[in-house]
Image (cartoon, rainbow over all chains, first blue to last red; front, side, top):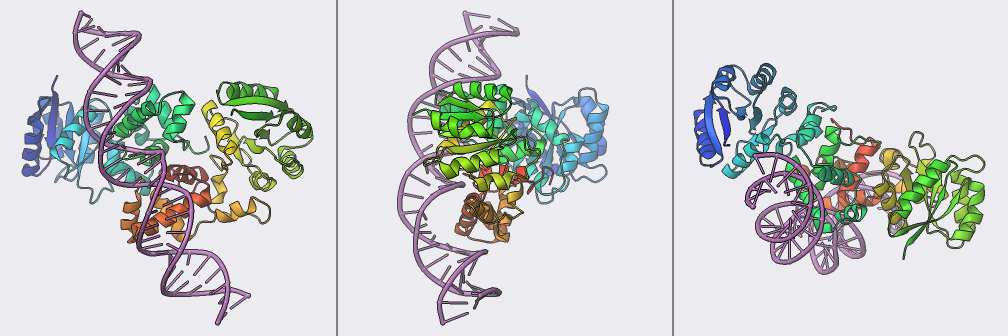
Length: 219
Length: 219
DNA sequence: GCCCGGGTCACCCTTGTGGGGGATGCGGTT
DNA sequence: AACCGCATCCCCCACAAGGGTGACCCGGGC
């Protein structure tokens, strides 16, 4: 029932810190560590984590490569949460393509770390705080991995419907009128959509919808 | 208090479909139909609709001409919402010049149709989601009631820059920080962008940016 | 039986947003 | 000189939006 988590980072300080944070949660359990991407396959095979917190920059094999190997060679691969400083995240797109489920800021608070682990363990994704911004500005998703992420966000039918209406520019009240619902209900759905997409507001959610291919320009 | 709507389209299937959609809404009422622009004046005089959904292409008199006649000859003309497939939008300017209040995609979802009708019935224009396409970059022609709208859609460099940042999901404060401006300045630019695009809020503006090609998914 | 996810709706609270003004300076144009 | 578009910044105000929390009902799985 507990979520098994492994930590991959070349800095021991980070590993220890994350382990403490994780073990402090009743539903999380730190089951393994690795100091380099090269050690990941063996460690994962041994400890069978549900989620791997993976640093990007590491001496021998970096987090992107390690993630790619992991998801390509394993039968039931764990979810991978990339650890990033956000200072230089040109690799965001590469990480998504490699199959990462989301991003975790190194300066995230313990509660955020724990929650992020739970989210990806559920099979959902954590696109926003770090990722979409770069997706928009730099390379393209081109209906590729980002689309999988959004689909993996597992919106319920109602939430997807609300997101579609949000993406046409409707306000909460208008969505409510269109679906014959109360505004409070729409607000609930919108809130769930924002949470699941990691979006801060409806604008970011709509951007995510476009960037992921959930919505296509021109219809 | 119900909004009276008339449908003008040469395809009966479209007319029936729209009528069903409209009558399904408690606040909308389909009051008239016409199969060609030539029949519009008489039909409008008889049924006195608040909004006319007008197809562009019709056998004898097309939607542009019918709209022009309607708004020129009637004392209190109804609002006209052009129905378009968006395949060929060369007539967008002509439609706006003729006095159309907005555009409706033929593949629009029922909820969107209903909402579009409500919007134009309120006297607002609906440049969404079809018409923006060129407005951002291109400048319209001159003259006519819609000429101002088109000219107004020309964004200044600063406004375009702000729109770009809005389209990455940034808040006003974040845009201000990015451009080393005061928040009030950004608010002014945002307000101008919204006005020029006919958008009600930043979400609609971002949608317009995507729909117009001003922003493309994937950068 | 119970639990749980989904959908529905309610309340509180804070803040960002957007609409309405206006003011200033600056660089072109006429 | 007068004008105007543009950019910058200021005020007030109303309200939608978003976060947090809790509630109810339903249907399905344990």
